[in-house]
Length: 482
Ligand code: GLN
Image (cartoon, rainbow, N blue to C red; front, side, top):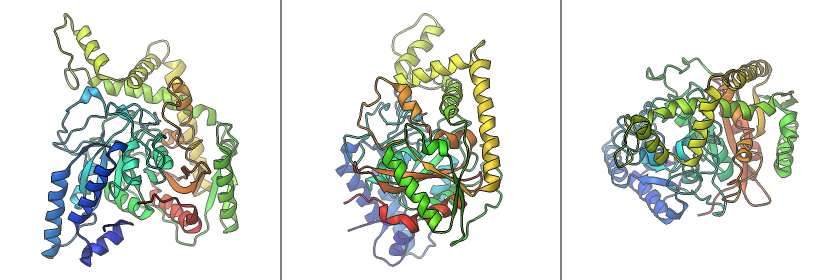
């Protein structure tokens, strides 16, 4: 039977004739059918995935050279444009909308012979932390189906967790790759802002959004990142490439942590204990790990929600039923009513809440009190990380305050859910890369990770440090059976 450990081993098996791409795709298609109730996929590209697999098998047998992602089966989040395929942001407003072009970041993967197996369920317009805001319904966490998979990229996380693909793409504006990765026990990687093209990623908050990667190993994440990390003239916010420092194997690391994070009242005591134990073992292994004061912690969530909702209110104005989006049936007397009807019917509750909030913080009279103030906080945070990375290789912290919660936990209290983003939004406010490493299992049987953050352009350092952690502490790694 087909089994997958990592891309490099899979490709060795292809070369050795022990497996083929059709077998791999068939295995994942069967798995998707078997686990359909998890609701991870919006659409499965069955025929074309099988067709491409057969073509790759034929080419390989004829001796054509294999490209870097030859036969690698990848799922994408329903916010990434793939020409001639539906992209709906899991929203009624984009029901049946078909992509007009392929996002360059995805095209880079296709050029390396990746096979795209389908697109994954998510919170509407990537707004949420539980995947409960999707027009397609909840995605279930395969570890415990009564618990949320996290969000907003819940479907992409579960697709990797429950072996429905080899790797997947998500988007991370405030933690939407790292948090579901933490809840599902897989790697979740957010590149630094400007490292992967955003063109063709449906925008939530443009100065925060990045396409991110879910995988089972740092090697797979590294491979996908190295392919997607290419300059794209269509995204003017990309950072020009410059060599990134790699940590050599065995090199002693200079790490830091924030005491304010580790003593935060919202942090689960067992997660705290595990991270403290991890930090002690790192010290014992000869690395240094020092406390660094971080007095801005209480400001990160408010600053994040002011700035992202402001950007969302502008980005989502294009869905008016004329340029894009659902058009209400029946005739209307005036244009204002027409727009209102289209948007009221098309958007879900959380998206409406954020558009209203964003419009409010940008309105005359409130702009300085909210938007400008939040921008100043962002500036202070950037100054702080610039100082930190002059001295340290990486920051270590929890990814989330607690493990995955049951469905409906914060139904009545969206603010409580926003506050739970406290450890992930920092990386997006400052534009630095961050990775959730799936190291631990809680006594409640759910997985959780540790988050590593490095300076901009230091994604490879980040992945190298994660390797060090995995080598030393891998015994705690949780694996899904079957
Ligand atoms: N939970 C965060 C939010 O709801 C993260 C969203 C994201 O990264 N797309 O905004």
